[in-house]
Length: 457
Image (cartoon, rainbow, N blue to C red; front, side, top):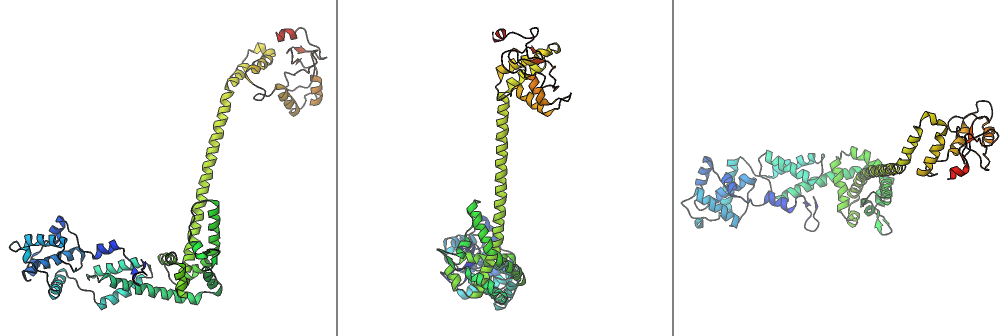
């Protein structure tokens, strides 16, 4: 696809295996021999018109032409001998393989002309080459890729039933077309290129510390890390001014996207030393296409990085949410037994309503701790600070009046504060030590309270 500088100036379009598949000697199997060496009546008469010692070679060339539409210069190799042996046994059984002789050049050319008349083909001459070159020039507007031009030429030869010329001839033809299209675009570029853009293109050859800018711009990001993305943003800033100019010029010059990729790939193929030694027109063309294509590629990389990071953050958030939910579930499971006892306390008999809060407090003290279940006094203070008094008295005066004691020196706890706030000193209160009814003057009621000694026992 690129010029092979070590061997010749020609473009290296096909690989060695592709050249062998197209121009190499056919390798027939038994089924292939039965197919390609089968002769029609007309072909039998043409073979009978040849000399007996060279007639098997006529059938051999005819079979090879049916397979690849090419003529070959071959010697008596092992594969050729196997094919000749099959031809002699099938079509010339009365003859011996040892009596068969290799035809000379004149005889071989005569056999090839007979084969062309039988298959309705013709050789490729200078007139045909000129027509193929003009067709390739038109195809170059679609793509300047040498392999694309070669396929278009071979397809045209097959449609016109023309024998393909040698591979070197096709290389020279494609090379002339590629150079002509490159020179046309380079001339337009030098006319439209402004002074600032010319300086930007020339500055790409400058070296920063140990590495030139072109070499730095060639490097693709290794991953989606922060440092690599910062480097991609810097590459985008370098490409942006040239990309703005390329958007209008490349359309004006009628350069296809495939041709842009090809010219951009030449910056990757050639070394910095060779790019500097090139003429200004082709070098600027390659660098401009490289900047335009690189700008689009950098944008694609940044979009891919954004999608990757968003997916990663979403995955981490989902994992954190599941972990928090599982942790909360474990916490609820730990306090599940205490929650069951709370439900049993709320379902006590209606007749025992005045003592249910006292029993709940004693039960909850066995199964819970102060951190899991806050004291009722805190709840009462919070509730009393929210709801207003029903008789016009302030909640603060209610707190002072409700702090009655049963004689032990500790403030009492209002059992009804958490249920319904009625800040009146005449409301019943309970002592937090004996859980007995306390009178309005802070003295325990002997009818409803228990002794401290019995409670402790």
